[in-house]
Image (cartoon, rainbow over all chains, first blue to last red; front, side, top):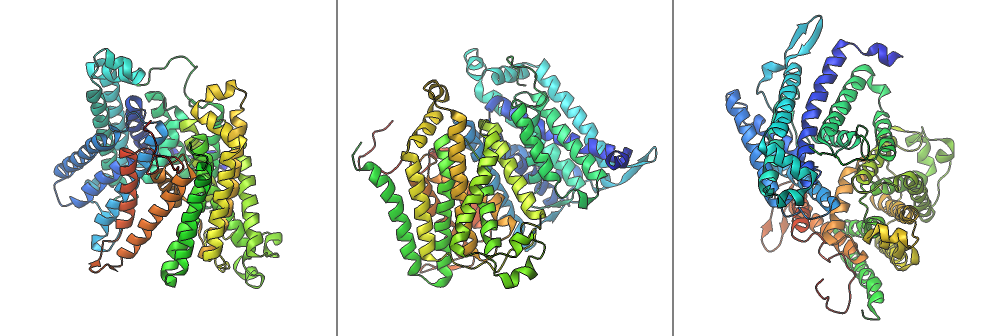
Length: 302
Length: 335
C-alpha cells in the first residue's frame, strides 16, 4: 500500500487541478460531438495555436496578450468549422475523425514552420508568469495557477450548464444534439447552432491555452497533443454520448494521472501507459457506451 | 462489367509496382531509397486496406503489427557475433540464435498474424468510435512494451546491424506478394462475406454471416501482411527505433489509404505511391532541388503538404482519388 501512503494533500490538490483542465477540454470536445457527431482530434492544436499567440505576444500587457489568444483561437475554430466541419457534416464518423486527424497534423506542421524560423524549436511565454508562484495553505504549497485553474473550471462549467439549461440557444443546442433533422424541421437553425457550439468550444480551448501556458511556459508544436489524446480517451471511456459523462470522464482521467504521477516514482511507471490503455480496452468491451452512462434508454446528449 | 475487369484489378496495381521497382534500378543510390520506401509503403498500406477497406471498421492499430514484425525480423537477423554485445539483455533463445533474412520475413508474418488474432479476438466486437479508440490503445501498448522491455528487443535504443537485404528485387516481390494475397482474399468467399457486413450488418447477419468471425479473419490476415511488411521495412532501413513505427507512420499510412481511396487495392497502391512520391520530392526540395530553376522550400513543408493534401482530398472527394474502386475497362456510370 505504498501508493496510498504516498498520496498526500499536495498530490490531491495538483491532481484536482489537472482534472479541472482536462474537464474543460472534455466539455470543448463533447459540445462539438453533441451537435456535429464529430470527434475533434484537432482540439489540442487549437490550444497549441493559443499558446503560441501568448508566447509571441509575451511583451504585451497581460490583458492584450490574452485577448489576442482568444481572438486567434476563436478565428481558427470558426475557420475550421466553415472549411472542414461543415462540408463533412453528412460523412460517416470515421471519415470525420480521419479528417480532424489530418487537420491536427497540418496545424502542427504549420506551427513547426513558424516556430523554426529562429532555428530553435519552442517559444517561451512569460504572460502571467507570476501566477506560477506557490502560496502556502495549511502547510500545503499550491501554485496559484492550480487554484486559478480549479476556480476557472468551476465557473466555466457552471456557465456552460446554465447556458444549456436556461437559454433559448441552449435549448436549440440540446434539441440539435438529441435529433438533428427533427430539430431543423421544428425551426432550429442548423448553422447557428453548430456555429455556437464551435464558438463555445473555441472559448474553452483559449481558456485552457492560457492556463496550460502558465503551467508549462515552453510552447512547442506538439503542445497539448498528449493531453488531447488522454482527454479523448477519458471522454470515450466516460461516455461521449452525454456531455456530463464525457466531462466526468475527462476529469477522472486527469485526476487519476495526477495522483499516480505524484505518488509513484518514475522508474515504477514505465509500463503505466500499457496498464491504462489495457483498462481502456476493458471498459470499451464491457461498457461500450461509457463507464458512467446509464441504461439503454434514449439519452439527452448535452 | 467486363469479363476482363477482375484481371485488370490485379494486373494494374502489380504493373504499377513493377514499374516503380524497375525505376528504382535506374536511379542513383541516394534516390533509390525513396523508391524502396514507396514500395514498402505499398505493402504496409495494402495490408491495412485488407482490414479497413473490406470491413469498413476504422483501425489506428495496424502499425502495431508492422512494429512487432519489424522488431521480430530485426532482432532475429542481427549477426550472432555482435548480438551478445549490443543486445545482451535478450532472452537466451533470442540472443543465441540468428536466422536468414528470408526466414525472418516469414517469422515476422507469423508473429504479426498471431498478435493480430489475439488482439482481434476481443476487439472485433467493437464498432465505430469505440473500435477506433481501442485499436489506438493497442498501438500505445505495443509501443510502450517494445520501448521498455529489453528482454525481447533493444528497448528505447536503436536496433542496428540488421542486414540490409531489401533491395529493388526484394521490395518489388514483397509488395507484389502482398497485393496478390490481398486480391485473392478480396475475391474469396470470406472477403465477399466481410464486404457484405460492411454494406449492411443487419442484412449480412440475417443471411447467416458471423460478423465477428469475418472481421477476425480479415484482421488476422491484415496482421500477417503487416508483419511481413514490417520485416521488409527493417531490412530496408538496416536500423530502427520504436518511434519509427508509431504515430507518424500510422498517420502517413492512413493518409495514403484515404488519399487513394479506402475501398480498393488500386486505391491503396495509388495512394501509397502518390503520397510517398510527393513526400520524397518535398524532402529533397527542403534541401534545395534543381528543376531548371532552384526550388528551395522551408523545413517542414513536406509535412504541411501531406497533411494539407489529405485534408483537401477528404473534404472535396471523401472517397479518395480512385473513388475506392478497382480499375475497370468501362467508363463508370455515375452512381
